[in-house]
Amino acid sequence: MNSTTEIKTANQLYKESGSTLPFKQWIEREKAKGIFIPNVNANEEMKNVVGDNGLDTTNENKPSPLMRNIAVVVVIGILGYFAYKTIKNKANG
Image (cartoon, rainbow, N blue to C red; front, side, top):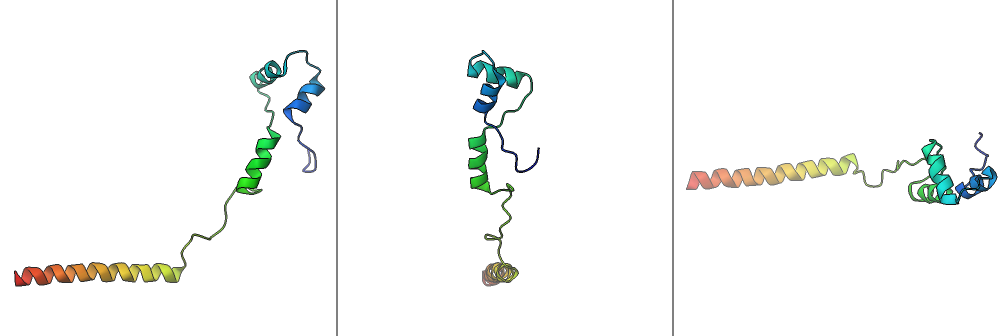
């Protein structure tokens, strides 16, 4: 099967099978045989939601190295301030 081949829906496969079973029973029988019948509509919706390759490769929420460094300096400064105040209070107390 090449990439230009259209995937058939379960309904199309059912009609082509010529089965006399009701559709629901035919689907259950095919599942029991281990035959996977894709849900074309669900697959298309999934592609629309996550993209064609299924991976989110954007870096929109990744902080820049500069912002990370600034955050580290700020946290160290805050911790240093509290350590200084604590030591000063113990020395005075």
